Image (tube, rainbow, N blue to C red; front, side, top):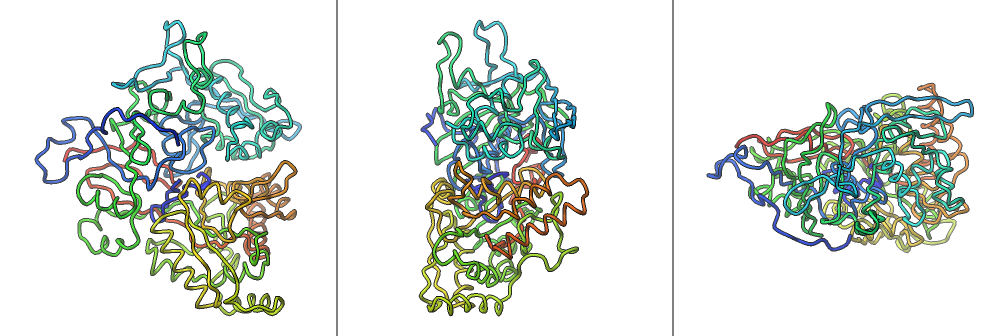
Length: 600
């Protein structure tokens, strides 16, 4: 996360929520900035609006435009404000109805697959008018604008439009018929893309391959409906085209369980209950009236929580974790839950020094993952021997393949590096190496620990640099990608393909390529055998054979070519007040419409 967790952000470390622009007007302070705390004299929450204050973000949100979003924080807001044709349950990751109440799947004779989605007809577009949520009207004001199949087709169009340069355009390009040619400018005719509007409540998508995850991809933000009239203008000029500014408060329109009320950049963003969301068993009407997402560094987040100024915090500073566990109150409010994400360091395989696989393997084998978990992250994470976390469809498991991938092996690491040093006639301490991470106390603590492991085991001196998240995202997908960089990937949909191909393969999230298919950033890597295997694995219907193919792919990426250092498989650490009723997401994106606040 999903997304790149892109990148999820990438997530703030222990929350394992990928951490990830404009100037929004600040019309008023967020409602209920200081909610009642146990023992306080304020009226119970039930006596007024239910407002959840969460320290969910360590920096500003990159965007809430589904067409160009890529990180977990951006996707979190977008999911609450919009919603897909289908829906992935945040706990089980099982496929559920979303805006489509049902869908028909047809496997075509040419090997493609067509899915026809039947949309609900009772969901209007809404906006915050400065006082309350209201429905958006048609040009003659005679009726509400309802969400239609055309709105979903337009959302896919914007995601694939070359001018928008969506960092996630590759995902639909991999799976949707004709999408790659359109997004890469081979054709400017969107009718060649496998998107067909049958009528207002019926949308037909044609996919390249007959695979089970096609309907899961339809749940993702890259295929959310979007309001063409506010983006491009409508009503003979009466509705002004807002272009990229359509996501700012005052212009923003959506249709999901919540909509955006305020966005004060680098400070907070608040979303309010959409009373016109009809709800469903899978995506109910919200119980919360408002959610305020504060944007604070990790230590400040915990301070606000302890002061009673926040109900939930998802970024626990590493330096505070021992104290939290020793505190009777905080330890009872700490939860640890599984998360389908992988924390790793990527290599720019064309950069000096790390352009030799022996160096890459040496650096990977010199990381004592269990020691890092025991002494630094302390969140019950699991040492990662490969990339696609066990639990995904098609992913290998430690039980079945204990020796797959790479492990801590200091002697083998020394031998690999010495082979390189002898050939080049240099010494370990003369190697010029840099590791970049996005600014975060947690990422810094991990980087400093691994830096010392490399020094102690290999005798190399690796410099550490950091960048603010939005800048970091751009840097690590460009020709300026550093030698080594921190990254993470959270599940967009629960299949190994989402990791192996959509992050690693040519034109994947962390392996961008030019129009000729030549990588230029991120891993900067191409292996024809790997490309063939992941394509074959995607279409394989025998589960055992699929796992074997992905195991082969992991061996190539992690051992043979060592394009990354898998470090650990995530857990999710949260502090939540006892009066908050909630679910715990395994995919990095919470379903706040299922949360509630009890009287306290």
